[in-house]
Image (tube, rainbow, N blue to C red; front, side, top):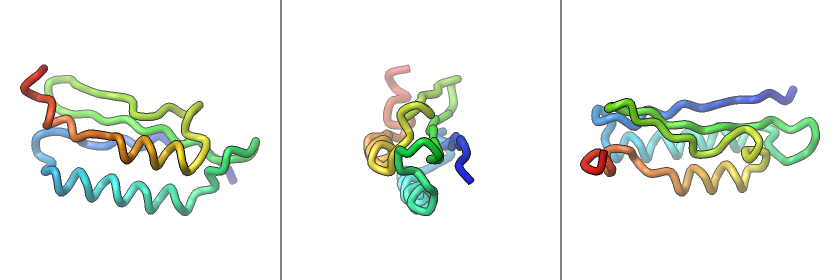
Length: 88
């Protein structure tokens, strides 16, 4: 049965770069098993990050997360927030 799913990814300072990369890999494995194929009855996937200093980002919204390719591209492009803390 298709559903709308939003994954929240912890990107705070307590998560290492390795932990962040493991989270991305895990999400790719989960999404691989979902019916995300762009059809009218497909599951939609959203992806957002949260971290310290009240910093959050939406990596892909439900309207765009309708294909495996779109979701995987968003996961590939997603950057660990800790890399940007000095700019906040």
